[in-house]
Length: 117
Image 1 (cartoon, rainbow, N blue to C red):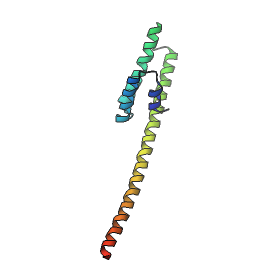
Image 2 (tube, rainbow, N blue to C red):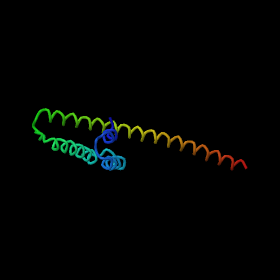
Image 3 (cartoon, rainbow, N blue to C red):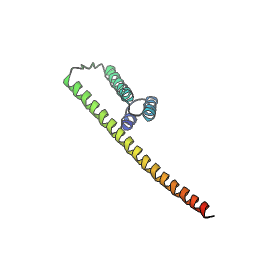
Image 4 (cartoon, rainbow, N blue to C red):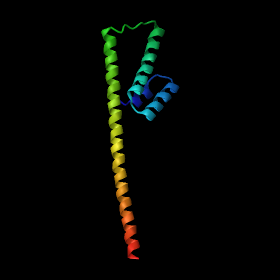
């Protein structure tokens, strides 16, 4: 699951989703952006519990397990995002190299044509 999917599928307000997605697109999955996403989601979760009158004990093993799972999910999404960005970068470099080779061939052909005249 990508960070974009996590943010897009979250119950956050559309304004907050748009802001986080824009940061993610502009800055990438930096530690600061990931921390902002975590904070926004945690804030939403905490607000829901507060509305229900439930106080979470951060030392509760269930809370710690849920936090650990959340951290793992975010780390997995970040790794997938980084891998996809790396693949895109490689694909772009290959396409650029092919384009450069084609341009070189065209230029060589043009030079040969000029020399033949």
